[in-house]
Every structure is written in structure tokens, then in C-alpha cells.
Length: 183
Length: 154
Image 1 (cartoon, rainbow over the protein chains, first blue to last red):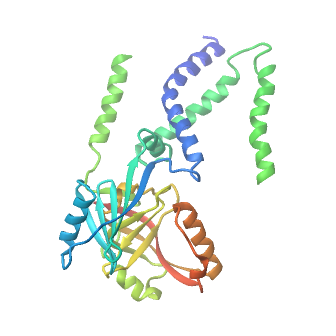
Image 2: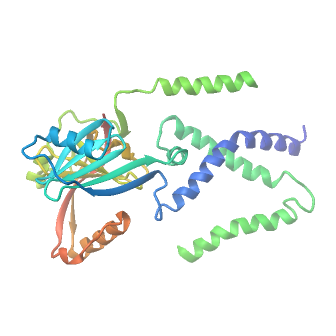
Image 3: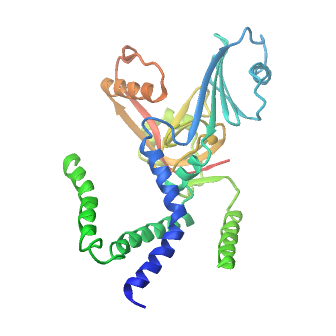
């Protein structure tokens, strides 16, 4: 088989395999790139209400039951914690409730993970570690192969000896300019 | 080709099912055999600065955006310690809030000037959309924290 034909076959098949991972990394890349402006993993809703009253001389457990009923929170209580003499934090699946005994203020912080986006971010940032590290390494090598093989797929005036050369030069030039300007 | 894809998917499912369920592990494996109480660290900080310790407690706060720190409650009332990890090396998801953790890390003393604290307060207020009054900062302080190495959350 001619080397260019073999290159095309490999470029095509490795390209098919890399498509899914490329999409995941691209979506996550955009999401994480703007982390200063938003939370790419979670949607956090914060709210505050003031209760009319809190039971007097009640135990911590009684307060928890009372507050959860008052805010209509039916999730399972994971734990509770007294953050100060006048405050109680209640941890429910997906919700953190802060109760102030003095002001009767109840602050809620509801956390929902962003569907699909969180999963892609976890993979992009190698949260699973272990086996995923090697998969990501193989993917990186595959991308390297796709980039280099892509340069030599076509011959003629649109190939690397013609138009392709100038476009490739632009591709290398962009990061080089930023590197010279910022670093 | 269909058989190959099926084999690949089954292998992945097998690998994920064989994953340990005894708590979620983060970072390096825990190596210390003895735990140190968080209250003890605050009581005798000079004794522990620079040393690796193992602590246990409840996670009450998690870094919202990067999962790069958590606050662990002390055995002493109203006291907690921050466990900071290198960005991306360990990422604590927000779901871990309210769960028990056993963590190992190096006990550190961070000395902040008044200016440092004002800058820090303004940054936190911006990040969490809260109010911050620089006038509340009158002098610098030394903050103690753990540089996280590894942890198990249950």
C-alpha cells in the first residue's frame, strides 16, 4: 500500500475513534475556560427566608425537623453542625441549610450538577485518575498523529507544499504571537 | 467490528464495577496510623508546622468552582481547619459537603499582612457575591491550614 493511502486509512479510522473524546474535551474546554465568570460544574441557588418563630427549649434534632418542615425540604439529612453558638447548619442531599437562632433567618444553598457538562469537565480534568490517565494519554498521542498525518493527506497546490503550508504557518503563529506578547 | 465494540464496552463496565466502594479516595493513599485532633493542631501549632498529620472530621464547606479546598470541622466546638489541595491534582465535588473525611496533609502556617487580608476578602466577596468591609480588617494574622495530600470520604 502506498504510504499516503495508508496515512489516509489511519487518519480516517483514528479520527472516528477520537471524535467522541474530541467533542467532550472541546465542550469542557469552553466551559472551563470561562470559570471566572460562571460555575461550569454546578448550578447553585441561594435563598433566604425568615421564619415567624423557632421552637423554644427544643433539642437540635427537634429544630432540624421543624426547619425542614417549614422550608418543605424532604431530602435525607446527612449531618448537622453548629458553626457558631447561634447557628446550625443542616446538610441535606443537594441542599445546605443555615439556621440562625437569633434572627430566625434560614439560608438555603441548593446545588445541582450541570447535566453532561460536569461529567465532561470531570473527564477533561482527569478526576477519575488511574485508567483514565492512560486513555487521555493515548488520546493525546492520537491527536498528535491526526495533526501530523493531516498535513500530508493531500498533495498538489492545496497540500503542505502550497496553501497548506501557509495555513499551517498561521496555526503555529497564533500561539507564538501570544507567547511573545504575554510571557 | 460489532463484537469488538461490544467486548470493549463490557470491559469498561467490568472495570468500573470492580472499583472499590469503601469510601471515595482522593490523592495519595493514607499512610499514617495515628490521627491528630484538629484542636491539638491549633493548641500547639509550632509543634506541628511542616509535619504531615492525619485528621478526621466533617466537611462543612467545599470550594464551589474548583473543588480545591474544603473546611473540616474540629473536635472542638466552632472550630474548623481548611484543607487546601493543588488545583486539579485533587478535586473535591460539592456533593462531599456534610460527609465524614479522613485526610492527610502538611500543617502550614500562613502569615498574612493587613493588606493581604483585605485583598483576600475582596476576592472572596467577588467570587461568592457577598459583601466585604475592608474596615473590619485592622491587623494581619497567622492562619493555619493543611496542604492536602490524600483523603478518604465516607
